[in-house]
Amino acid sequence: MYAGVVAERRGVTVHRHWWSQPPSQPFEPQIESWVCDQIRPLLDRLGGSALLIGKSLGTNAATLAAERSLPAVWLTPILTVPWVVAALERATAPLLLVGGTGDAMWDGARARRLSPYLLEVREADHGMQVPGPVSESVAVLGRVLTAIDEFLDAIAWPR
Image 1 (tube, rainbow, N blue to C red):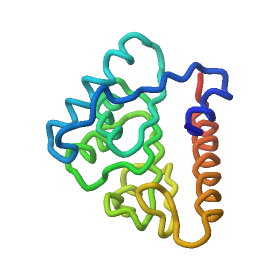
Image 2: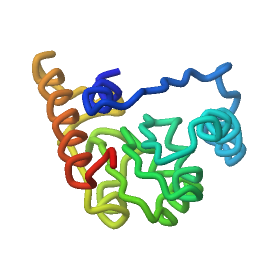
Image 3: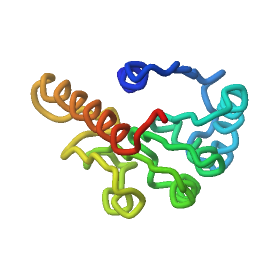
């Protein structure tokens, strides 16, 4: 939600996408084409220089970002499946990776090899929540939004 607000405040239109149905096998290779089939029609309608923002399952759209040279923000990307990592390796446009050391699907060393734009939060889980008071997890949300804003400044987006 708030990641889109960061983009909206830059004067762009945000198109939020909801899955048409729950995926049947989210950790099998066919999920990549399922996700891309869901996102491709929207990108085709938009044209131009879009920015992709996706979380978790949405990072399977990294192949579209790579094919179209689109910048992207990947929140809690699934860095434990080879097809997502391969798509991120093919990226030619800048990408921001955001994850936590408490997330079993995050690989900090791999993330650092994939992009210079990175936010890694110690002990954050897949929902970017950290142990302790809830206010600490809310503070993490603030750090994520700041990282997105700084990333968009660094890549001069939108152009």
